[in-house]
Image 1: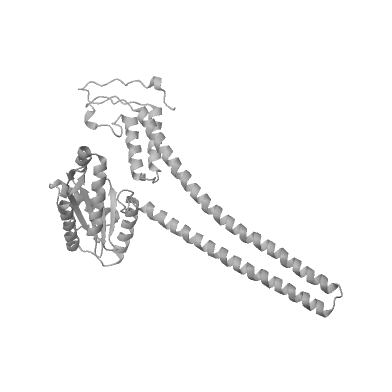
Image 2: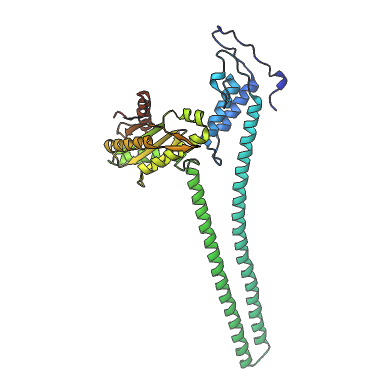
Length: 371
């Protein structure tokens, strides 16, 4: 372990009226925090755990180590103002251990699948090569036998008879080879189709959010850039909608995270039903925030669709363990403008509209200002 438990003593606590808390200059803490940040920076999606979530957790742990901020899972309200927070080394070790185990299991499983596919392919190719070698040997033997018959001064009738037999034998070998190769070709074709389908499904799963089955943040970022570039080249209107579930933390605190997951899944269904076109791109942006890209849709039409989504959320009645769950959402919309220098500018205007909707009392839609 790279820190010394014996020397991990509590730092002197500054008086309540002290303007600042003591600053700890410890190379071990600095190195630990930097390692956590690097781990989060290069995180990758695992089963039911996105790279973004891992990155956020690593950043929180890094802040906990470096500046004694509350560790992930701690109640911020339970921390006294001005009081040094004890570093939760056991919690950090458990987090790192479990995350590393999940990464190891994911990589090991993926490599095992790849080895199996490559093994099947090599075995199939080996069968083709082995059969070709055996048949080639048989063909050479047949030709050598015919040559020996000719060199033995046999009669023309004997040579003719033996030649016909050799030709027939070679013909049978060729026909057998054709049938064998056809079967192996069909087998290879089926394996390649299965591999292509598995790769396509794996690629699709990498683009989907595990909980809601909507597109994830990574897929959204890529689609936003493509849509921005296309929108700048064409004259068709494009709108970006950002949605946030109001007071979502209260749902988790009052009913538990399973109830929050139910709300997220049901609202995701509302989004896909409200925006059913193949060109409509619906994604979970992160946490309780969602985003929709509407191709060939001007602000007026996008506003009507946004109002429809607001009403659909208001009408939802979810039963969770005999208790009724209800919630509302806030919506912000921005139409792509020629003044947008990049996709980030467009996204910022939609996010600003969403912020104004929440500041205005939530449960409403605000249209972003054109620039």
